Image (cartoon, one colour):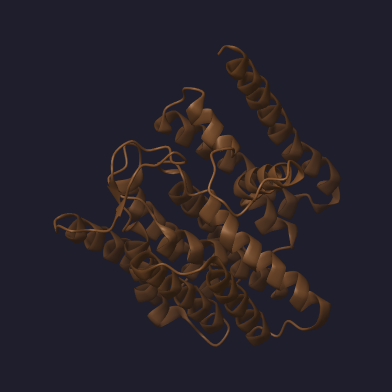
Length: 321
């Protein structure tokens, strides 16, 4: 990267850190109050997304070229919708419509058409929402952003895409600044204004990098698989049981880990280890593409073992009462 490109991540980190520190000194912040489906016990400000997006916004000023601009605009449009939802409340159908419009507009601007546009739109909308679903424990979504976008930044740098690398690095370090306030015990939560656009960015940048041959399609899927697998498996199981999958719940695997007695700190550290392991396998795919089948088996095995262990312990805990 050129010196100017290195400045963007630094600016993102400082802006996010300073804004959140300033906001925490002010009163009357929007609060996330505990309810029957949450894991926290005390009201906590949900302002983290404002800091993250402010940091990304500053970084994008010097990095958002014609290719990145549609991604940036889509992310900030969704952040604005999420803030409006927090302030006034929006119907579910309106929020989903915004997600689809942002996804379609971004992909069309990137040159995606035909069946690829349909598949890409569904992938972007799904990732946008599952990131929100997985934002329910201290340090979890922030850690996924720091590790996931950090892996994309390194892959883009190795792949000869310095602008994309700097932008992904800016997202990663903004998430690190947020983690200063969100690592257990959390002083702030990310909120929809952070989780929704971060999910959108994960999908849109993953598609952009694949289109530019910076990484294969499987790379971002492996990097973000800790969120993709937990959310997808959980919601498929809820759908098969006839439950309304769009309603808030506490049946994600990460939620069950806390309900079974683990602390948020223990969950976060274990999740970081899994995220790093999946990122390592993603990079192994870049180095050893001829062994992709074995790498996929290696990536699936930890999830199977973890889910089986949690399900077994969950059934035992239910039988104890």
